[in-house]
Structure formats: C-alpha cells, structure tokens
Image 1 (tube, one colour):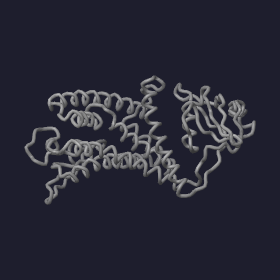
Image 2 (tube, helix red, strand yellow; image 1 turned 45 degrees about the vertical axis):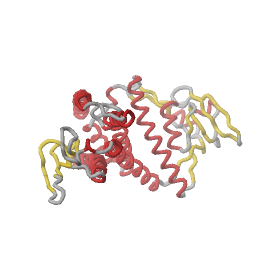
Image 3 (cartoon, one colour; image 1 turned 30 degrees about the horizontal axis):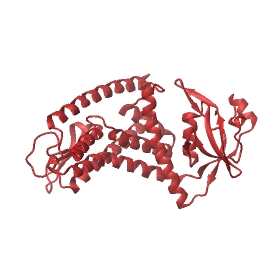
Image 4 (cartoon, one colour; image 1 turned 90 degrees about the vertical axis):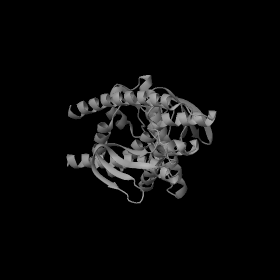
Length: 350
C-alpha cells in the first residue's frame, strides 16, 4: 500500500506541474505565440504526440518532477513574427505570470472545496475551556490565567486582525508561545490583554497551542465564501512568513523540502485522510505559485522583473545580460535543488 500512496503522490505532483504549465500554454495560445512543445516531465520522452493542425508536440518525460512550454524566441533568436519576444511587453507579462496564477487559483479552489465539505466553520469566539484535569494531564498552563474567558471574541493577535478560527489558530501557533497582545471583544467592548498560550517544541522551535474550544459560524453561502477567503489569505501569509522565518533563523535547512520530500508528505497525508491530502495539495499549489513569483533569476518572477523594467523604461534589457542573469540564477537554483534532494533522500531512508 505504501507504494500505492507514493504513486498517488507522484500523480498529484504531476497535476500541480500540469496546471502550472497549462497556464503558460493557454496564455501563449490566446496571444498566438508560436509553441514548439508542451511537456510534462523532463529528460527522455516516454510518450509524444504531434498535432497535425498546430504542429505542437505534446510530451511526457521520464522525470516527472518538472515540465515546460517551449516557445519560439524564448531561449534563442527567432525571426518568426509569432515568436515570444515579438509580442508586446504586457502580453509577455501575462504569459509569464499565468503559470503561477493557475497554481494560486487551484489552491484557492481546493480550499473552497474543503470549506464546503467541512462539517462546521470554526469561529474566532472562545466557546469554553477544557477542565483543569486536561491541563494537568498535558502539563500545560491555561491561557485563561492571563485573562481570556469563554465568550470572548478574539479580534487581533499582536496587531494582526483575525476573522475565523483558522486564521486565529495560525496566529496563536506562530506567535502564542511568547507573550503577545490579544485584543478581544467582551460585553460589547474591546480590550487588549497580554497573553502567553501553552506551547510545544518541534525541532527546537516553540509553537503556541490553542487551548480552548471555539464556537462555529452558521454555514451559509456568505460564510463559506468568507472562510474560504480568509483561509486562503492566511495560507499565503503562512507560506510567506515561513520563508521570512527561514532567513531569520527560526527554522533550519531541515525544514526545506524538494520534490522527494513533498511527494513523501503527500503520500503520508494520502495514507491518513482524503481532506488532509487536499489541504496539503492546496498549500503546495499556493506555495508553488508564490515561489515562482519571487524575483529570483531563472524563475517566472525573475523574468517578470525584466519585463516590468521594459514596460517602465520603454526599452528592454539587452538579451545577453538578461540571459547571463538567468543562467547564474539557474545554476544556483540547481545547486540548491541538489542539496535539498540529497537531504530529502537521506531523511527518507533514515
């Protein structure tokens, strides 16, 4: 069964890549860019099909952790009037951003499905605390000792507004292990308390624990859309803050995973629960979309920077300089990927 879950993980990972490359492909077709090949996977081809109508070759490569859309003029000089460089900058911007946009859209749609399927919609109101025996058993200190009480609606944590149980839980997890300012609505009045939530330590990092039960919001169309919106934006924030925390030193390199680590996480989630797998897919899809928009050479975000420069200053950066920047970025990214892959493999067999 473990092999089956790995196959499912690889399939789902391929779906994420397909969605990303499909974004580039659709946008390129809309703007009539000459496309040579649409490939899911890298390396030697397992399957190929060439359309007699368009001449586009569709391929599946042996190494499924990747893919590309090959367009005329993208990496070489081309006199074709439909080559990518011949198109207006705004069209090239849309084509370049379309892949990441599709990943973000997929992530939001998956979260919408999760919210719709949820039995209830947790609110940011404290319903009740467990009894003292629960805290004694788990050797935890209750946040109620800092002034929180049942009936309080938590409005903000360290100045960050919260609107649902999901974003409230995230803020508690991220900041609650240390003293934090918690703004609550109590008896129609706002007040701010200094609260420290119980915490646990994982890989040397302390995380706060939500130590109370929350109320639930009525499940209607408005609340489903509201919870989807805030769950999606909180997921984006979670991904962004994890990158910031990595550079700040809160997390070590062991927290960074490549395709093997991601596939392993998906296979583990698939073995446990369908909706846990869907949520993980949503997070990975949004993560993939955001990462590709970072202004890093060789990524879509790096290419967007050069297109923006052209749109602002009305002249492109010389191709040789842009190519050199992307080449250096590509080499550095490949080096990082090899290190992460090596780490993932060691973790997998340890």
